[in-house]
Amino acid sequence: MDASGLHPVQTLEVCDLPLAVRRSGTGPAVVCLHATGHGARDFDRLARRLGGDFTFIALDWPGQGESPREAAPASAERYAALAGEVLAALDLRDVILLGNSIGGAAAILCAANRPDRVRGLVLCNTGGLIPPNPFIRMFCRHMARRFAKGASGDAGFPAWFGRYYQQVLPRPEAAWRREEIVAGGEKAAPVLAEAWRSFAEPAADIRPVLKGLRIPILFAWGLRDRILPWFLVRGLARRTPGARIALFDAGHTAFLETPEAFDAAFLDFAGGLPRPKT
Figure 1 (tube, helix red, strand yellow):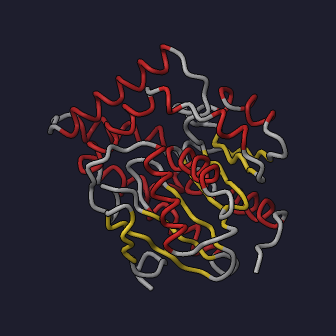
Figure 2 (figure 1 turned 90 degrees about the horizontal axis):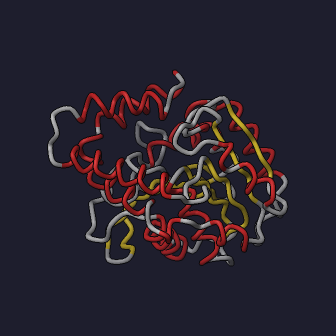
């Protein structure tokens, strides 16, 4: 086991790409899909806390963590395809998909594409669920341009990115991870620009896909999030058949910012799922 608390990285050839995957723990599988610009490290402490009850499998998206970049631009659709291939390559069935931000959108699409392999979803401040409008598309394009400037070497980008992540992960419990993400901001900037461009496209609206799912879902939402605020998602969440809702005094990533409260909600949700088939 490495210093992070997860087993050493395994490289899987997925869609002609070497994708880094970490795993640890014992028990039913939880496949973890991170936010853009983050990485599998997001789930280290969660895996350490709950690894006695679950096997945690965390992916590094292309160009993030220990996975190399690829030619295909970042998008929830692309990430869902990669996640589905990981499930197939590892022959994982009856998994819980835990996704944050673009990772949550990828989890929804993956569950729709691979219904035989997914038994539940945990959606943490997930993208693709806010009704699109011209202002949202304009904001997404603005953010894409800001990250593109960072990718081109803008001298002011590191300071701006540091201020931005004080808002994304505001709580002190996430300071260890926030510092790592900010330190890697210039490396991640090209992928962040691609992802934000994708958010402005019509395909980014995955509300119809969510409505078609027939599996248990937990909306695990941080109420301090300014990018994906709860008030724009709560109506959809409340109308989703059988969905459960857990709200946290957190920003974008409750499992990093309010770990004890998140763990309790996760265990309560997972404990109510049908047992995995043997």
